[in-house]
Length: 524
Image (cartoon, rainbow, N blue to C red):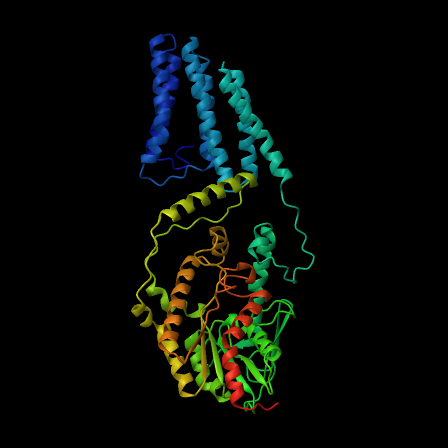
């Protein structure tokens, strides 16, 4: 079996030596000194075996039930060899050795079932461990303190499965699988993992269907895709309408008449992955706030020009070829995620070892204890690290993102358009709870890098606004950044998030609107 399971050669040699000692002990059992020496050599082989496996350069996997079976076979052989030895003292040494090998086999068996989440294997090892503890008391004359310790271990082994069973979560019954019920949030997902997994699968499926219904390839290869006009699609319970000009929302005329036009230029976070009929993307929230809170004598239109997967450079092409014809009075740029790759080179080297995600185990209680211990160790390592200094602003200003923003500023200035730049918000930041960050890392493995890049993006936008006083900067971070309950994933908003972002933009531009709207009468 050792050859079959690819045990390193040093382990095979020690097992063969141990087998030879057991055979020799039967032949020399009438020699007292030889019996004692054989037991000593057997113990030496037993102690050297795990150390020898660690020293071996050959790849070796210890956590496999095969090795547990080998240990149990050796324990059985030692128990049989012990019966051939007449003297009590050497027999006790062999008996202790046999129990040691049996315990080693059970530890390997249990560890295999636990680490690989094999409930049946783990249960077998758990029962064997209970029998070993019970047999240990009967096989040896032990001090009272050790007997008390063993009794405590037996009580733990018996009660843990009972408590695990009593505290198990209630079975999940999915009555309305298509209705978003907040399963995307960390608060609910950490309680009901099954609901989150189901939600995430449906979320990806819904997005795939949305793209299939609304987008077609661009024959000119200028953009990732083109938008079908006068189309509609469903995203969960939200009805998404694409108008006659290819924007989300009601139909528009190219000529704006006397309307004040605001173009919301952005990515999928502007387009809006809305979930229910009441869930509005932030450009629609902004238009409603302007209509309700400003005393207007005419129309203000907010055009949702956001599209999924498009970056700022793509939107600059759309701006020049299509959007400028609509004569916008203001452009609000909410970009971030789709251009983050332009800032990768500005990131410092990352050496941080991330905390592993929570892993399901045969015992939920043990799995939670394991996770808390690893989380505690991670926080201690994180606290001991020196903070990394951000890259120089000159390096950020040389990036492709900076060039694209400068082009946007130049286009807006050349066409007499008010320009509003904004920072980008995400569900987590470096100040968020590590458990929440790890929750998002399961779907976004590079979440730590995205957090750092978003920080650089904010620095860049703030610097560009400082260098260009005619550009208004809106900081979207307050009341939104790291407030994960306002997101359906790392970057997309739930209804509360879109509402918050709409309110933030309204507060950031209302003074400009009052000035601009006071300068000219608006036609109704």
